[in-house]
Image (cartoon, rainbow, N blue to C red; front, top):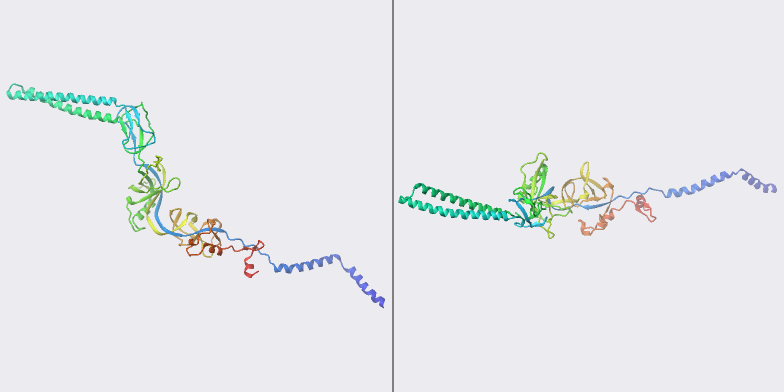
Length: 444
């Protein structure tokens, strides 16, 4: 019995070894391994990183007293432009100016050979002397024949002939005097002087060349100080300007002689002098539907003997029709053109984007005047509008990548505090991966 009992376990063990399959053992191990891993997966759920809100640069809507400015495209025109033409025919003996230089009024420009004209003057004076001698003779004859006629010794016919000769001689004297004046003028005309101060152009005739009276153009003279600026005004612009000049916008009427304008130079800077309007056409050109307006402005020569404004030059014109207080201003970069008109992207207190349709007024110092659609102090996006849409959360960054002083905030709070409130929704954790907001809120 003991032998049987001792062999029974061995027999069972042998039977167990025969029935176990190695593949079953491997499958069982795999099941146990999965059961050990699954609880761990359930405790650490995997979530997708939340994208960061886009960064934008903003500025606040400001308020200032802004002049009412209407921009136009103008052209500089000389106040005076004359051709220098001789009044006498002759040969040029001298040219007394440097081409392109600034000449003064009455400055000598050309001299024509004066000798023929001096000779003509001498001849006219000689004729006058001869006529005066003839007058003395005939005046004596008239007196003599008159006395003889009283005595009954002379004939009346001789007396009348003497009187006629005396009258004729007097007429000759007057003619000789006129000839002398003409000769003097012709002699003076041999010296051509500048009729006004201006810039002389290049000469078209040189010394030794023959010039024809009233025909040959020697050169041209242009007045450069003051100078005209002409520009075209459309019918709608004219209506707006008339409304502003009437005082409906500013409460003060403006006469055309008191309307000021400024100019922009080619380098973008503002011209140092201010001009006034002096002429407005009385009719609109039906071909262009525009009205011609002209102003006059100072244009003094500088030390280099050259003017800031040149006749024929294009200049942007800014016509000033008073000023409006408490105007709202935003930078040019904040205004976005769309199919719905001008729009501005506003960041509200919740750091969300709002798209506003606005009415844009005039441009003043690289800022647009906004007449409707915005409020003072609102934040408008000036950089990054292409990355945002309405309702999107954004991160505000300083346009200059630096924190402005606390005084720049109207509420009296440093701008850095507002930047911290607008942090991204998802922040990096210690491992460098983004930590979901849900885990952060739950304290995990």
